[in-house]
Image 1 (cartoon, rainbow, N blue to C red):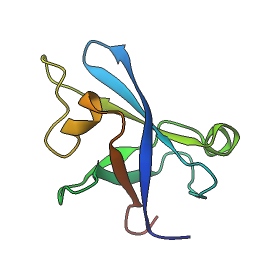
Image 2: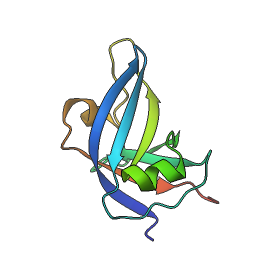
Image 3: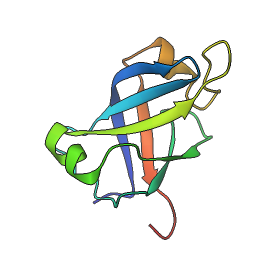
Length: 102
């Protein structure tokens, strides 16, 4: 399995005024992880990636073929430059890579 995957954004769901659930489409690509694990994510083409805890369970990731991240946004709904395109363009792709030692 590759250390970094480039995955399409399946959806961005507003869960609270200050959080978004970003769902990335795994398709047939495996992304093996353990509950409580984090991954470095950032928009394709951006050099900056930040760690986020994986919000989906390993079983749900396999069942639904997606991986989810709960991210905080500011009062204007902005996540930050590393994921800015995600909330505006659902055709964005996101790099997801396991944290070192994971």
